[in-house]
Length: 590
Image 1 (cartoon, rainbow, N blue to C red):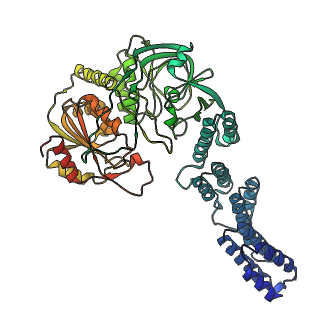
Image 2: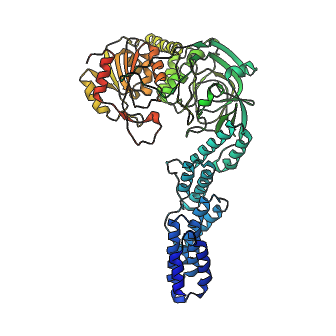
Image 3: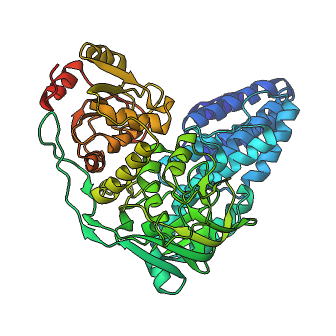
């Protein structure tokens, strides 16, 4: 009998495993007392072999038989059986019974005195499902991983470093977006309901998406157009290497109208761009004819306070259980307001229209409270009505009356996967008007705006993304030609503008620091350094910088390989030779 038993064990494999285990189970009753531990050990070895063959159902059964046979190690074999059964059920997408098994796992660990891993591969299995594009299975596994963490003290972060709750929320948003784009909004609503309590979220409602102009025309508010729609020119992009075949799509050359509008009884969310009124979501970006290219990010980032998904002319937005109530305000808060580049291009031009007589003087200017002090300095500088500035925390706000103004152009946060990058073109008239307003205010404050012939290099040393890796080498090369190093983030807004305006030559990474070249003098020459990605928003940077009258030349370096970041934010290197040739190309003697 012992020889037959050994033969069955050695010949068992994935193909005949179930039959082999049936035979073994039937023979266990006849195993001699003195052979029980050896038999159990052989069964455990078989279970380990089945695991290696990804036959987790057979492995769990083998470990279970080992637990039945052993006296001294039954608790350990039982623990292995439960762990393996959990993995098997999750891999087979049989999730419903796993939560009960996690409690059994807790008890089995205690019985075995086990101090080993608490989470039986749930987070890794969820990650595998995520990479395979199986979002629902990934969500189910992450939810079980969260339960394992709560019961057993298991893994708190996912493979890519996100908290489990954020991962589930983001996957749900992707699933809901796909349903919304297919016009299946009620199904998306039901999907949110299945996990919202676990994540501590509120219900979502379905809203019709309308632009500010459409909402006002329907009688929901007052709208005053200050600059009409007009055609703008596509910028001419210059590269050191000559013409480059870009992979991005040129943004619309039909500049949108600029306006100031007022709406009553609105629900808003600091850190996000949407305005809810009745059954409508008022949002120019989502209502734009080209919005299909946009991956609208409201509700996905870590500092946002609600869930929102868009598709087929309607949106689903998480309702807020509690909201601060304000009598009135001007909307200078929104998505990415703390990022300087987004702030200067998307938000600051609104002050032109909030200063118009059509906008009430008594409304406070509402900003996000996470923004740096330089952002507030800009508002204080441009405001002509001496309005109070009201920072808003991350809590929904209901306005009895809200003033809104537009972004100067259609500017998606990001393109959808598989869609070419949309490279927005910025209208020179709006950015030029903002530039003049800032410079006029500074001159009135006695700031010296004379050009001095300075040559400045903009350091990005303090940032981890889109970093010029060999910055020190470039600084050493430029120092011999009269360049000084500037750290813009260490200067006040006024100091930055005076510095940029005084310079004849500016070299630096195409990044937020380069945004202030809007305030260059109109004879300045700008050399923008960047990685080699041909989808980068070269048109956006060109139209922005050249709204000042200055000229820009791009130098594409070499992208640092292997980094897990958005391609736009990849680190890179350029050679000193490239930079010096670039300066010669723009007429700067070295």
